[in-house]
Image (tube, rainbow, N blue to C red; front, side, top):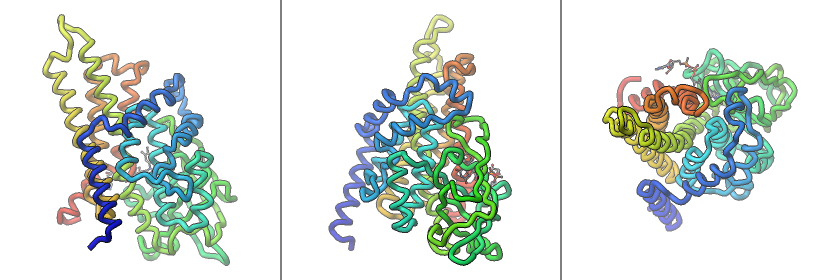
Length: 400
Ligand SMILES: Cc1cc2nc3c(=O)[nH]c(=O)nc-3n(C[C@H](O)[C@H](O)[C@H](O)COP(=O)(O)OP(=O)(O)OC[C@H]3O[C@@H](n4cnc5c(N)ncnc54)[C@H](O)[C@@H]3O)c2cc1C
């Protein structure tokens, strides 16, 4: 039987989840959306998107508002929020903040790098980095992908060779979000290439450690305001205390990070879709063709109804995954469904928005086309849609 505290915590997380489901204007979400509209509306966004420029000032404002510290424990300067409340806040951020790259960068740090550090880091590692990450003084990145190891993440070749008192790291990580602006990086290596996934080992490394070089920001299709780059380790010596978990425990640590990432990374995109729906409805009501608002044409109104259907489905799946993780229950299926549903809904919804806006959706100045570019990455990062379907099929008992 669960003890009284556990039962009360579970009851309260159920109550929070139910309230989140029933109240689409949840005060927690609305408050962050309003704050974001007032504090993160950057007139230079169009130029920054074009120039692939990160907005450190916006990042710092989010830290002051407690965004980065949402789920960090109070001992390390965080707000220690339950996962559903944190989810609602990220949805609100997506609704109110038009800089989708900023929202993505924050989400990537919080749900992969920070989640790994908080769950598996030593007291010393957490004490050094979590308060700085929460306050915005430091930025954290998370690196597993290599040029030859994408979906097949456990085939990584970056090697950590044991030496007296520590390890020497050699190899190159690819597409590492925030790498050009980060201070610290969680990096997965192999300490024993012979045994595949059983040799994967994680490290937490200060980016200024000799032997690390960060490549230039790689311009990309969307999310251009959050930089990403390759990170090369060349005879990079790290102490044993830089290891996260035991030797060979990296695959389990990475899988745990992925469950958190899949469940939560797209909460901001769900918020963005809510904003796109509102903008699209407004446009459909205002734009007149053939003497009537285009929203009176069924092909237009159904396009928007489809956006709403996909949005509501994704929202409910996110809360379910968050509620299961909050209760400490298995959430692999729920997290894969949430990631798949939220990323595909955001992408299809952004495309629908362009259809309804016609040429005004296609030109850059209104930002509608940016909405589409910003959503494409969602079906690739954190495990592509194909990989999420593999997970779902495997959990359904189909051969993998
Ligand atoms: C915006 C963005 C940010 C990123 N940030 C980071 C980061 O911070 N850190 C990091 O480590 N990585 C990051 N990545 C990399 C990301 O994790 C990989 O792109 C992703 O894992 C897919 O790997 P890949 O691009 O090599 O594609 P591949 O693995 O080559 O896949 C290509 C295609 O083949 C399909 N495919 C491959 N294997 C299978 C299979 N077994 N079954 C079915 N289909 C399959 C995929 O679904 C996909 O459609 C980021 C990527 C993007 C786009």
